[in-house]
Structures are given as structure tokens and as C-alpha cells.
Image 1: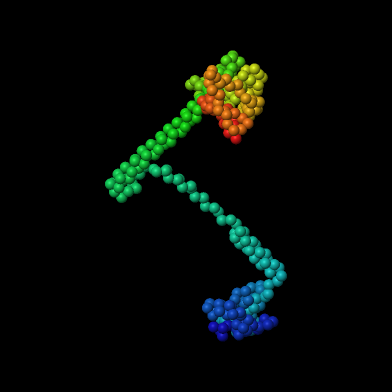
Image 2: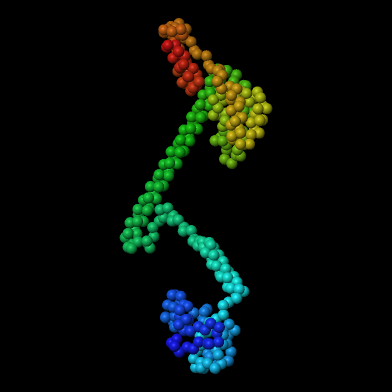
Length: 321
């Protein structure tokens, strides 16, 4: 094929077919063998009969017999401006490719799958046969009944626990008031009507609005020195006013605790022990202290007075040494 191509003799450095092939790289030579075409960036094949050539192509000589043959001419090397334009174009292309490579891929948002209802009731469509559906339906109904029974038991147990706690609170408070009246028959006369009228939350009527007074009543019921606080608040209405100014349960509890600190640890008035005329004296034991009668311990237990019980038991242990 190259033998049929004439090379222009007017080119300063004529390129023959063999020279053209010799200037090809291995890759370009392989491409030429497959396509039969020379690299377009190095050579141009033009028709010798063409009246005009491309600007960057050397024309064939006028007398050459190449009218019927194409001519291979070498392209002129590109100038600096053309190379700069190519570099700028390559740079822009590389920049676009870099932007595409570094651009985060769009996050595909999937709709959140709705979580199935716990132990949902079975449907006919979920089973191959109606018989299997009926069996599943029966098991599901049994589970619902067991769950309802279990919930009811837990609620009953919680309600019983709360009632027991309320009963213990009320019983302890009542015992304190009984002991205070026994030790001081005029105790209730020292408690103002305003303090006696305080009601806990459980005593509110249906629809009655709760106030800070109900919180004060709750704190008095739980206080280990309730009788002393009742007398104190009756004698010091300014302290009652400060309690009513509390805006949170925590603030009220701290204010009550400050008042309790004035009485906790101090001996509270207790009823005098009954004596039986002619009763023998309690037996003495080895030591410097006489034995403590069982009446003091039993009295503390009956009154549910933990402090008096501890004092009586400590005295008994000291007497036994």
C-alpha cells in the first residue's frame, strides 16, 4: 500500500514511506498494521490533484507525477501558542475529572421501614391454608389473654404496695400524735387550727385543686419529729409562710429538713411508765449499771419509736457488761 503513495520532493526533509514507518513507535506501528492509516498528528495524506493544501501541509512539486496518487507530507510542528492551548484544555479536563472523582456521591435516602407491631394479629393472607390461620389465630388470642392477666397482676401488686406504704405512713404518724398527747395532754391545744386543717394529697376531694399546703402535710406525715414541727409552725407562723413560698417539692423538702434539724436527736416527751406498787425491783447484774426493765423496750416497740427502742437496747447492753 505504501508503494503506491508518492512523497513530495519539495519538503525540506522529504519523508519516504520507509522513513515514515521507521519514525513510528511500537504502539503506532501496531495501530498502522490494524488500520493501515498513519498517525494523523504526524502525517497528512492529501490528494496531489487538489488545487490547495492545508495551511500546515507542504505542497507537492508541480511536475511530479502524482496526479493519481496520494501524497504523504509531514505536518509542521505546532508552535508554542498551540501547545499552550492544548495544555490548558488538558488541565481543564483534568480539573473536571478531579471534581467528579472528589464529589461525594448522592446519598440515597430510603424510606424508613415501619417496624411491625408487636405480636400483631395474624391474617389469612399470611398462611397457605385456612386451617393454619385458625391455629395461629387461636394461639395469638391465648397470648393476648395471658398478657392481660399478667398486666393486671402487676397493677394489683403495685397498687397493693402503694396502699401498704400509705398505711404504714399513716400508722407511724398516728402513733407519734398518740404518744405526744399521752406525754402532754395539752399537745393538741398547742397546735393551731391552721396546722390541724392541712390535708395530704390523698385527702383531696374529687376536682379539688392541690396547693403547697398539701405538700407541707405530706412532709409532716413523713417527718420523724412531726409533733414538734406542728407545735413549732403553730408558734412561728413566719416559718409557715416561708414554707408556703416554696415553688418546688425539692425546695419544700429542704426547708422542712432545716426545721427538723432543730429537733432531731433531742429527747421527745414520752409518757411516764406506769408503776405497780409493791412490785419487786428488777434484778441486778454484774456491772456498774442496773438492768433495764423490759417495759422500756416493749413500750418503744408498741409506740414504734425507733429512737427510744435504740436507747433502751443500748442501755440493756451496757448493763449486761
